[in-house]
Image 1 (tube, rainbow, N blue to C red):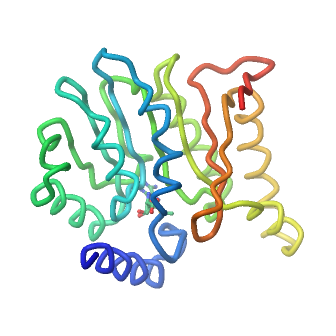
Image 2 (image 1 turned 135 degrees about the horizontal axis):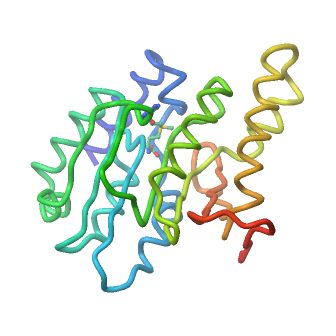
Length: 223
Ligand SMILES: C[S@@+](CC[C@H](N)C(=O)[O-])C[C@H]1O[C@@H](n2cnc3c(N)ncnc32)[C@H](O)[C@@H]1O
């Protein structure tokens, strides 16, 4: 309770200092975290490699760690040094996190600079893409599909109707930027989506998109 209040305050402070990269006023809800990790929850017995991008203060990480086993690899890429320190403290102090600390590595760098030696079976991303320049969104999406295994699953969230609303209420270069981001994200969704979840219990409500590693002409919507 106290720890979650502390996380909310840390998050809000960073929202004010670094709005563009923090992207939200409070950490994600447990409903959103459950949806983000639902493919990992259905994993088989074989060891898996998991990458979490933009874990923030760790609301989604809290769920991811419950699905990990000995032999897995869990990498976390977080830009913000204050959030990285919060995560580090949790791996040292909280029992469910401590149990997988030996499998887990926090990389305090931007995703753009992260160069893993092997691909991942599950990528779970909290990056606030709608806040970034279109060229950066393109670079970050390329990175997702460079580091995911062909049978891997990428799960990310976006706030409901945020891009469509911004397209209507903005003009000029802001509108061009959001339209370009829409095209990039929708292109990947059309070719790779396996499911989309509506998560209403979150501030604000969100869509969770689940995409597969390999693109096809027709996509593969199953939900
Ligand atoms: C919307 S918050 C999500 C935090 C957390 N996953 C949650 O759901 O509450 C976005 C997170 O992405 C991080 N971030 C933003 N840009 C990044 C980048 N280029 N590379 C790595 N992390 C980044 C921010 O520091 C922040 O922790």
